[in-house]
Image (cartoon, rainbow, N blue to C red; front, side):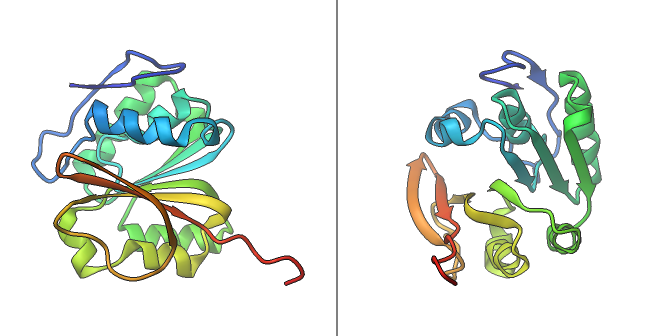
Length: 188
């Protein structure tokens, strides 16, 4: 069982995707994530990449995010995300993309969409095959001063230096890495 742990939708139980390819974030990890983000969530534009059940984006909305965008290419997950959004009554504050992450980011960048907070929870092997942080950086969808959070397995850290690592938290086998978008320098 997963649930919303705080805010407007607190206590709402969310549907799970009954497939081993979807790893829902546990309450302890989600709690740590939002305790660190705290006041940054209010009024933010939030991206939940590799959404699975959508619980992270819905938690952000519950805690005051203005809008949330969900991206997942696995159709059973997309159906559950839409169902969970409806369960919270958040349809007017959300957009769900059913497509491959990089393609969705390219489309968002063409529409000049920018996010205050991006949360990525890709399949662990994807970090070795493709680097989702690189496409986010290249397409510029994280606002200057924004924060990108990557969940990964302790044994599969991401490669590359696409963003500046501000903080990382290890909980069990999971790591939450908090990357800061660089602010433009004054006068440039």
